[in-house]
Amino acid sequence: MSAPRVVFAAAMVAAAWTTVITGLTAIGAARAEAAWLKSGPGTGYAAGLKLQTPGQPVVDSAKCNNGNGSGPSATLHWTYPTPLPPGFELLTATTAGGPVSTAGTATTTSATIPLPGNNKVYVSVRATAGSWKGTRSPEVAAC
Amino acid sequence: MKNPTLRRVLVVTTVVGATLGGGIAVAAWTSSGSGAANAKAGTAAAPTTGTVPASALTTGPLYPGGPVGDAKILVGNPNPYPVKVSTIVANGTPTGANGTGTCTTTGVSWTAQSPNAPVPAGGSTTLTLTGAVSMITASDDGCQGAVFTIPVTVTVVSG
Image 1 (spheres, rainbow over the protein chains, first blue to last red):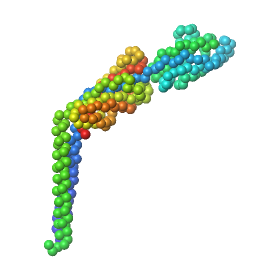
Image 2 (tube, rainbow over the protein chains, first blue to last red):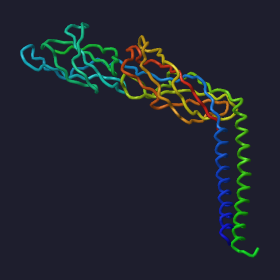
Image 3 (spheres, rainbow over the protein chains, first blue to last red):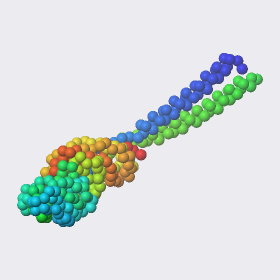
Image 4 (cartoon, rainbow over the protein chains, first blue to last red):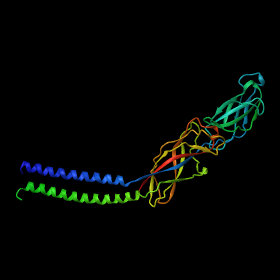
């Protein structure tokens, strides 16, 4: 077989494969066009966490010192429906139902907090989630 | 033909050519199928969405600065053939209602979703999109327990 004939035959084969590839590409394009898209406005929904009101705290133990010692504290626990919130904040007031200040935080349903001034305080607790704060529980007197 | 090598080359070329013919024939047939789908697209109707009751929003609630939460969307397909939900992207400012107080600043944002979820012909399906929403720290305290309504654009694809 002469060299020109070999070159001719090779060119024929190359042309054939070029046609095959072109045909397959055309098929792919046709399929892409077949899948249409359609858009429309709609509404999605999500919910915000609902913080529950903890149960009235129970004083498990208290170191009151009656104004004479240091380190007065109280250990308390309370109830909360599951699932638990991200956190709890414990609050104390020097008078029943009076202004409150933060005495501590917790991530479970028990905590030990300091008792300011060695005086009788009223302790309540509320659930927290980020900057959100739930409703305070009823108070319990410590010392 | 006296030259055996040349004869083999011609035979191979002929076979390849015949194969090509078959390939082109298949290509033409497949293209015809695609054309029919295009005809459907001409009369396609946009997807719809429906109300998801608050009682169904039971997982992944949001709170300020918390982890991403879950969203739900009820997608309807008015077309007489099935579609797939391709994308769901934000299309407006979310609002909040039925919280514990004033909920003007929700702090809620939507992350684009590509669920690729099927919706039957003439039917609907409720999608739960895990991690589709989040809440920044600046969310009104009154948004506790609120239901957030989030405008989106839903795109469906045929097939």
